Length: 164
Image (cartoon, rainbow, N blue to C red; front, side, top):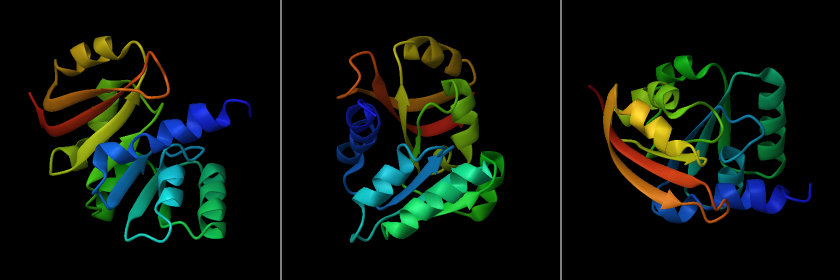
């Protein structure tokens, strides 16, 4: 609880200035709601929405309850990420935090990033090795943003994803 505000909430909120005009967000593997539910709460009263993908029914029920009680513009989809492409969502921004190593994360997010969406992905100190491995299978535009919360972390902005 001592680190909840900085480690989780502010870590999630730091994405907002990186995509300040985006109104359609998709959070993959939402789990406890970071960053997806936090972003949806930040969008209360605005013309923006966040779709959260979570396969665990218990976690999804928690997210639905929280978003409902706070009237946050978020929709929880109880399904595996691989099945979410069928939803025909058109997010501007795709997020994920602590979901998978970057090569796997790119595979999971490719239905959106290979079109017009941009990814904002939290990564820790070993992100360079994950980038190197990812470049064996993928090419993409990349901007590295230093985390404002974690001195060893980054937020990777990935766009124009394509298979090599």
